[in-house]
Length: 515
Ligand code: ATP
Ligand code: MG
Image (cartoon, rainbow, N blue to C red; front, side, top):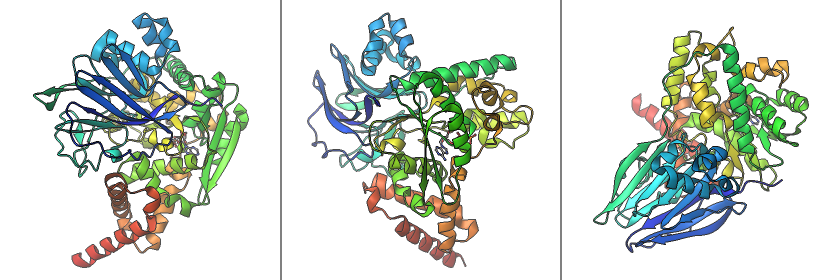
């Protein structure tokens, strides 16, 4: 297995005056080896740490312009062609993005299709911070009067002691000591004016489309097949043995089917618990595709106790999203160590409306899709840190920019058709998967793995009344976020049971006060 060759996380400070010393080595959740990164130009210093898988070139340089890239780019051939330098396809992704920047300027970020975050120190002394269309490589920023700290993980910045200043165009996180999040599909240009940092431009580089197209069904099916195949192919890079996390649902089975079409050997892995699993459905797909398949069973009581790791990875307080991510975090942590590139079927339901499978009316279905697309940013579901906690690189073909643009804009009548949800995707996979898989109803990861019910059972067992379960989960998630992300505690030092106990007593106290 070759494994990924990229920067999977970083934390750097760009400074223009000697201010307070940068705090000690950042504590990343992302596992990988650390390399120092350093660049200087015209009184500006960029200095910090990159977390690496393989031996990537983290920094690229052209004259006075320096660029730090986390993640990877998927439309490499198109960029190299447009820039007129075929050799770029052989170089690093950081060099490719730098060439795109030199060619197009800020609009390069409207052309690049990838899972990345970039920091540029340009020849005019400006600092550019850019995310991909989906913000799928998180970018956090904290500015003070001496410089700007930029990181792929909020926890590395959240205890900054200096006086933080506002970063217009980025979103301040509550109680985060001045840490801001760069939104999805955004490039911020920061400048210093008389020693003070200012956002000079906020450039939106992608927005979820609101228009819809109504192609002939056959044409739509062919397009989805072609684009998903291409998204999987470009995500395999040179990996000879990719892994697909496979539930046996249509989304991950589709990714596995396309991966098999491009690789000699595909590993698939499924997880389940004592409460629930989808092993049979996944094994049927693996058998059909001839993948090297593995099942991993986790005790559900152990699974919920890994919630602190999910918070550590995703850095969010939304308990529903944490329920989706927890089984994946638990699965990744149980895979044998070593380099690994994972493809998932995550996120297909958002543009296809898969979660709204009982919504009959097309206008309602389209409205919820528009709503979900308008509100995804900040949920951090696609973060690479979810697998990074196990030193693994993961990538999500359904959130490839071209796949996403295509799926979002399709007429809702192609998403729900003949009473079937995700119709266009299922049709596009005809002939590649068993009929039973093509027809299999959706089952959410939190349902298939029993995560939701296991967490609920822990709360009910503690005496939390049923109608308070959601509230208690939300309170637990907030508390863990406070301890781990804002407070800098390690996940192994935060006990699920203690947080549960304190939440339960707080709720009891509240009940007593109310009555
Ligand atoms: P469907 O939406 O039709 O159920 P799916 O199961 O592939 O398809 P989700 O349920 O949305 O998709 O789950 C999101 C992704 O998480 C999956 O595509 C898959 O990559 C991964 N996943 C979900 N459940 C499991 C599981 N039990 N084992 C391994 N991976 C899983
Ligand atoms: Mg599923």
